[in-house]
Amino acid sequence: MGNKTLAIIKPDAVKNGYTGKIYHRIIQSDYKILSAKLLKMTKAQAEGFYSVHQKRPFYNELTVFMSSGPCMVLALEKENAVNSWRETIGATNPAEAADGTIRNDFATNIQENAVHGSDSDENAQKEIAFFFSESELISTQ
Ligand code: IDP
Ligand code: MG
View 1: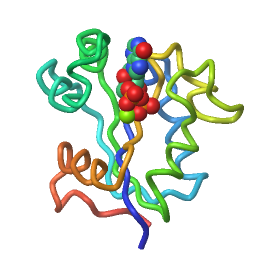
View 2 (view 1 turned 180 degrees about the vertical axis):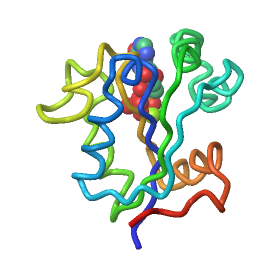
View 3 (view 1 turned 90 degrees about the horizontal axis):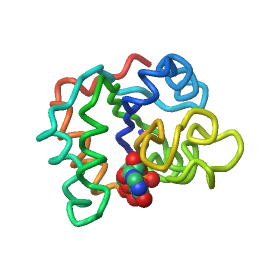
View 4 (view 1 turned 30 degrees about the vertical axis):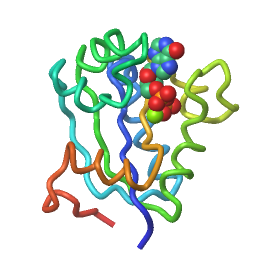
């Protein structure tokens, strides 16, 4: 059993029709999908999810964007899941994301950057609990 991380296929990627492609990459990169669901966050939910960024100048714009349309949230498991997933997605700014990363291939700009990834095991646990109950973390593999 590996560590867990929270991934989100953000509203820009869903709207642009990349959900299937990104889901496929996740499977190809050997993550176990413990759970996945499509949802549309309210503004308040997006504010809660990104509360660590509330002092940042982009906080309002970011939470408007994250509540602007459906996204897919996924609980992933893999050895070293947090760092591994951050490598798979690439840098926050797609202009700086390495070739072959999800953000390089599918992001629009630094805000609408296709996917989310947790930044530590501790935050991964909190973020997974934000969207999933224990009984939803099941895995198909
Ligand atoms: P991360 O998603 O790579 O962990 P964070 O710094 O945690 O990046 O920022 C959270 C999210 O806020 C980013 O994924 C992006 O959507 C948005 N964001 C980060 N920096 C900027 C910025 O300078 N302008 C607009 N949006 C930003
Ligand atoms: Mg972050």
